[in-house]
Structure formats: structure tokens, C-alpha cells
Length: 152
Ligand SMILES: Nc1ncnc2c1ncn2[C@@H]1O[C@H](COP(=O)(O)OP(=O)(O)OP(=O)(O)O)[C@@H](O)[C@H]1O
Ligand SMILES: [Mg+2]
Image (cartoon, rainbow, N blue to C red; front, side, top):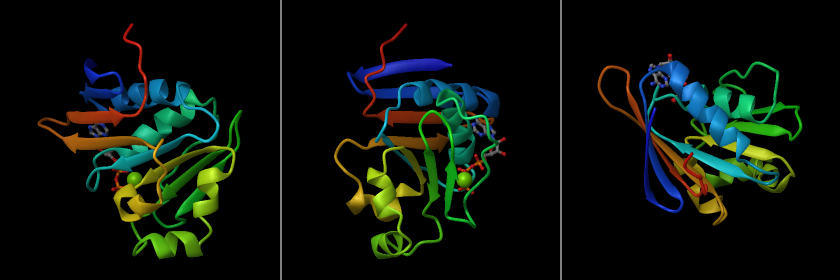
């Protein structure tokens, strides 16, 4: 794992494997709090669900995380509830509101939203933005905006 810090809350991390993405997700999950929203951007198959599995580990959730592409919203119990939302099949913010997802943003848990660009106008200022980009040989460039991540 290769972590570089551009400013106090922008980090770029290179993940070399799906397993590393899980570990990165776990350390993100450990830093989330009640009300945190993580907005995941990046194309098909970049690793958004894989990262969410790590986030769930970091939140102390034991249940297995599956892709919410068809269910759109999955809820997991844990020390904090996790709302895992996939906006891929939504046309826009109106759809998000109509299925009752907007209230989850303020529902006292943690929200992770895949394809968050589709509902970007509904996301509050404190949203943590995470972009995943595919590099060569399975590597992923993961950019995290909005977490004060002490380098250790
Ligand atoms: N460095 C890596 N990080 C994450 N996933 C990786 C990496 N290298 C390979 N992979 C593989 O890429 C795939 C990522 O799938 P995943 O379902 O997490 O993507 P996604 O962004 O959620 O896709 P979708 O847009 O369909 O929701 C998995 O099969 C995973 O094993
Ligand atoms: Mg996915």
C-alpha cells in the first residue's frame, strides 16, 4: 500500500490487489462515525463493492456484504448501522428521494453510496468522496477526500 498526502484531507492510495483494497476499506471504516457518508465514484468493476466490504469490517460488521446493484439499498446491523446504496440503476436524485434513500443520509448510521455521482446534488458538504481508478495489472488508485487521516 502506497499512501501519499496532498493536503490535510486528500489522500491518494495505490492498491495492488483486491485484498489490499479490503485493508484500505477497513482503515477507512475505522475512521467513520455516526452520520458519515462515503460517496464512491469510479467505473464498472473498479472495486467499489470490494472497498465497501473493507469499510464494513472496519465498522465491526460481521455480516457478509453483497453488491446492492439489484436491491439498491442494503442495511447491515453493527455498532453503527451501515446503509449500502447503489445508485447505478437510478436515473437521478428524484429516484433516490422516491425510494426513501435520502432520509438514510441523516438516519444515524453510516452510508456508503456506489455511483454517487448520480445523486451528487443531494450529498451534504461533509461527504467523504472516494474515487477509484483502474491502473495497470489490477492496481487501483484510490483518492479519498474528507478524512483527516493521520499518517502512521
Ligand atoms: N486492486 C483491486 N482492488 C479492488 N478490486 C480488484 C483489484 N484488483 C482486482 N480486483 C477485482 O475487481 C473486481 C471489483 O469488483 P467490485 O464488485 O468491487 O467493483 P464495483 O466497482 O463495485 O463494480 P460495479 O460498478 O459493478 O458495482 C473484483 O472482482 C476484484 O477481485
Ligand atoms: Mg459494486
